[in-house]
Amino acid sequence: MPSKKPNILQRRVTGAVKPSEEYHATDNATKKENKSSSMPKNQKKSLKVSAETYKDMKVLKTIEHVSFDYEIIQLLIDQYYKDMTEEQQRRYTVLRENM
Image (cartoon, rainbow, N blue to C red; front, side, top):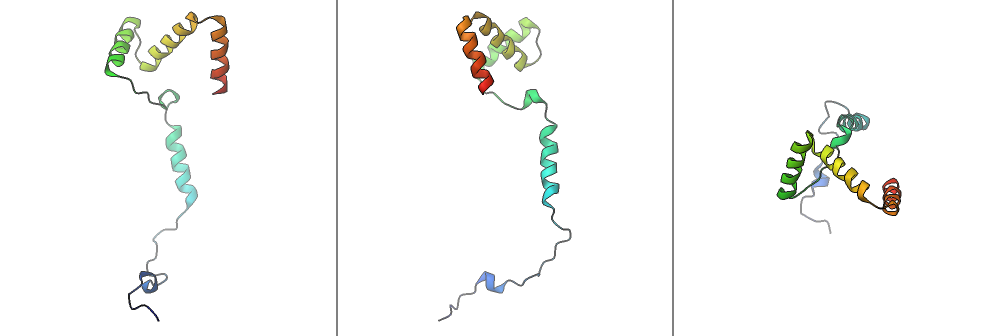
C-alpha cells in the first residue's frame, strides 16, 4: 500500500533550477593552492606558550636585539644544542632528520 505522506524526492522536478555558470572543480583547487603558497615559511606553524614564558621571551628579544619570536626560539635551541654532550647531539641530529 503506497504511503500518503508527501515525499520530497518524488516532488522534485529534474532540471527545475538551471545554474548560471558551470562548476569546475579544478578552479577551486588552484585557488586553495595559491592561498597556501603565499604564506611565508616561517609563519606556517603556531606555538602556544604561557604568559610568563612569553614575557621571558620578550625580555630575551630586547636583550638580544631580535625582532621576531622564532629568532629568539632558534637562539635558545642553538644554545641548548651547544650545552649537549656529543652523544646527545648525535641523537638530536638523527631525530631531527627523521621527523
